[in-house]
Length: 357
Image (cartoon, rainbow, N blue to C red):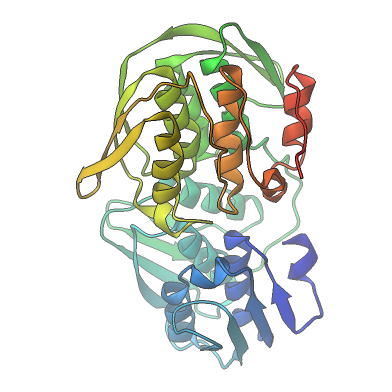
């Protein structure tokens, strides 16, 4: 994002960064820039039609360069605002909604977004609104009516402290949950947070992780675990790849909802989880639409390597199995997307790693 947002290049290659693709599509469109946005083979399979349709309705000119509804796309400019009201499905990726919220102040009439259907990933919408507020724009968010109203205005400079990433912190909860003994201190992780993934504290408390917040740190220790967990991942879908491998290896059965958005991530994460959990004879099934069931396995032997599917969270979510058995993880460099120092941190707490060619 940092490299591309001010790039003078005509072709913008986001590689596998879905957030970057969606946010920059909105940004380049409304700022009247002519760009080609492309990415990896998997990125070209990830839908962007909903956002493109919304931007076209506002007044942006965008064309698909290959398959309709998917990258690569080309932005041709902005011919002036055609509407200040959009209807957007609320159960898709919140990144579409955040992208539209953030560009709305640049529109002469502002923008009202009507969210249609059950609203997912609410914490991410709240986080977007809170950060916009910090920079001088004050969105009105009314979940009862499903309305987001963003006025026309100018962002102003502000000083903020960027929070530690709770998604990255979640993997250390996984290590703690599976280890026989553990005392892990995470620096700069504070109790108050805008991030939806902060709920990992509540999930992992059920799975045997105690959280103690100190001044500018979080300490994790062992606690008692339940044997069956029921959880709704609607507001925190990225945590599924942390929680399900822990349950599968720990002998905890599970019932889950809110996993639908995982199918359009870096990979089809539901399929990926199903495949990799099966390597310890754990079974992830969908007995009825929108409801998933997990039957744990036995991690006594793991002869097959863990495939990562070009997905950073697959590598980091399954890494805690190393507390119980030697594991091989394919394409470990995928962690570079969000946590480039992950393997170094793993080694720093005593694990040995070696790279096989």
